[in-house]
Length: 484
Image (cartoon, rainbow, N blue to C red):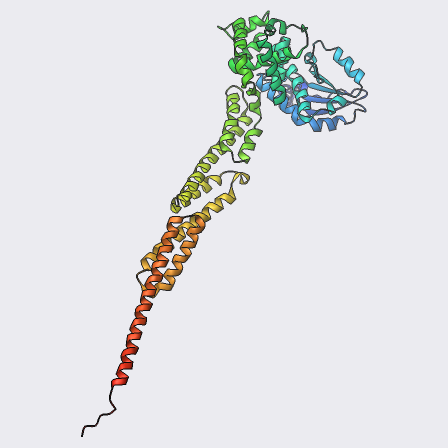
């Protein structure tokens, strides 16, 4: 039997091998395609570029990797999709006929102008390189975000998302383009006023009744309304319910109970005037983007930075994004510190305007201590230095004037006392402190007058002395007197 005994170390190795996870399908390299080059953007994204398209697959991937990975990460978090189910493959076509043939095989109707067309079931995005390269960077990124949205929404709903909601959500997750969004709001408002709004049932047909811009705008406004007034958790429940519900209304009634889909549709119509008047600017998806808050901090607008972070904080109440939460907390802390420092600088300015120099010095010192906790580019170093110098000059001048007043009674210190008063008066004049400048001026005048009185008194005394001496010299007798 000993011939068949397997060493214990071998058994352990076999167990470890058996316990090791199998390679994920997402980590596998793509199979080569003839006439195409490929590049891996991330574990979840692959780029294919048709030969002769211009950029190679690697070049395209390097250029658009940040936008692609950021869009996928934000969308999976925003739509509560914990796991990426399959590779997203972006196919970049040189041949426009081949691109059109690929689009024709996709069983969904895309919005006019959307050239990055998604096939959600197969997690494929097709786009023509020539048209794509002609777009602005913002429009090109939004093309990719729009297409990725359709795929992630498909994962979230079991590919049962009604078309109207699907297109509205894909527009909602694009980066803000205010002229475009303002136009959508105006279209919805006009349709509402003219009684031309399309019902939600017709908007959610697989084949739209027509492809006009009004329906496109309505789709966007509906999703914006649901996210703002129902919240993300209810939206997630709706998306999850679509996997098994017979109709989208059944899924909505269950997710939003006790409010029914008919009631929500009516409430949406009632909300259109407020939305079109300015609420269209509110977009929870923008909470992922902290650039506005960073810019406000760089400008020293700490109140504006705190305001810009509010939507990120609202997003983080529902979305699990630890890295974003940490950065929001850091920026919020900087805004708080900056606001406190700015308050102290305002106190210093007010004290300088009131010529209370010791209070100004204390306030600017506190402000400098707060600013030291912020990045160097945020600190108003020149203004701090100016306030510190003004406060120091004011305190020094005040001290000089006080000493001059004390020494004013001692005629022996006249020169030093007068010089101190003149210097203090010059500093007060530079600081705009008219009251203390006038006090210094009065002291100098008093010193000069007192000195003049002393000179005159001494002059009179000298004249009297010389007169008496003269009289004495004239009236004295011959010397020595001899008495005989």
